[in-house]
Length: 204
Image (cartoon, rainbow, N blue to C red; front, side):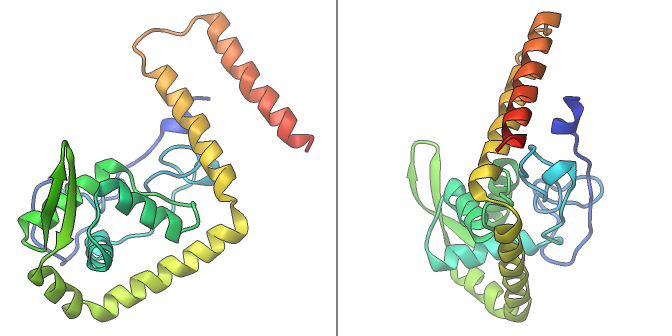
């Protein structure tokens, strides 16, 4: 049962946006193509365990650059900005956002404008603005698609319920990864808690 919460697969895609840099694997997939499904209500999958492809190769870089052009941001702010744009139906994981920021910095398209502890705030460079100008039509198409997906997520999925699903998935993930085997009694209690929640929701 628990495997459904944690199952994910790789979907490498080759693209022409940017050179192969840090984070690229042997297939040529970079940070914004590995794990592009981000966090759905059940962890990395979508509703009911499905996956929805939102970004082709290089597109997440353009999305982040466009957001940085609006205002300097750190990683978590970018995650929340994308999640809010998609009505809570999708949020890229930190494991995707931060390597992409590093790649943009290495390409000279973004730079650290301030730092507080481990938190770095990034801004767009002049080269980054030129990259946006060169990809204006593509960026407009990306954000049109994001807005359309956000409207659909908003109709089909309540952000509050989506967050609750993620909380449940993270709670189970955390318990399963503590490094200790679950006893039969613990497994029964976890299953009972989930079943009780299901019955309560069904009765609403």
